Image 1 (cartoon, rainbow, N blue to C red):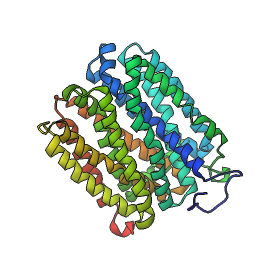
Image 2 (spheres, helix red, strand yellow):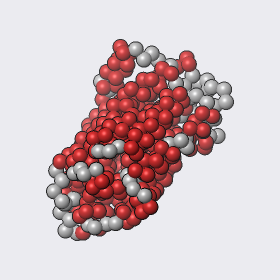
Image 3 (cartoon, rainbow, N blue to C red):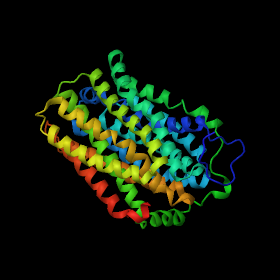
Image 4 (cartoon, rainbow, N blue to C red):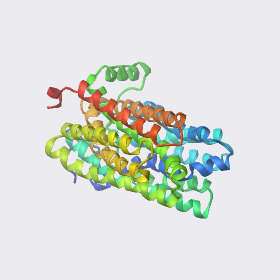
Length: 406
């Protein structure tokens, strides 16, 4: 049994054990699988659908925007009806969207079905985080979120490699068949897992109530400071996701297999730092670990611009600083989310949803900026990453005062 449980009644049969954490990790893995598995295929999708980079990027930016908006919808629904049922509905929508992507005949239709896919994935992600807040206290939430990132980290590590292997034996459409199949994996353990939100703790989903919850969150400077930290890091990661396939494959001539390995290397760095954070958050507190991650991310982003911005240092000038920068995700992601949810346990679904909306909206914007500024060099991607890292760190240090952190 995992310790650090919050007080209060628990539904009959509820288990806060490793199965619970693993199930939530699988739910969180849905989104990175949907994004990362088809990255090696982006250039080939463009050729197959006779579309340029801007149009193919719609399937990526559209996914991020729909995922962001979907969280605003699913969060309050989860606060009203519980977490498990809406999560199951979201998984089914994801499967339907994946099948639609498989059948798409042009870039616009593909982007449309990606929107359906993302809306379903949003339920699994936002409600999985809310389940953690239902059950654990703040520092334990940060620790458990880090462990969940280890579980879900296997997905983005393997996804681009699997996508590359699929391209060897089939065309890009088979990737979406695999995604639909993998989304069915969490269904059985989720059905068996008891509900984490008892009826007496549920809230109305009336418009006035939902609007009031979001207004209250937006007026909380501490909440915004934590959200900004996560948004800066996640936006920078999406700038990397958006730009790296074209930089690695087209500029440096990296094959799909090596691309998958390079992508997996970065995920390994995130997993290692997530494991470290699961210990740091308990020993020193999640705020201190967060500040370490924010400072390190700015320094590594600066190194990325210096050594990788114009491509003069070759592939290594991009890969090495990116690995160090993205490894900071393990310190920033879980701790910023735990901080954002800590002061609002009574509306954890709405708090998780708004945080996710802001983060993925920033991510979608970052991807569009990188695509619009593409000039055949790593510069636009590297500069966008540095800007977002600085913005997230600055906002957190200004809005979450040291006295409040203690």
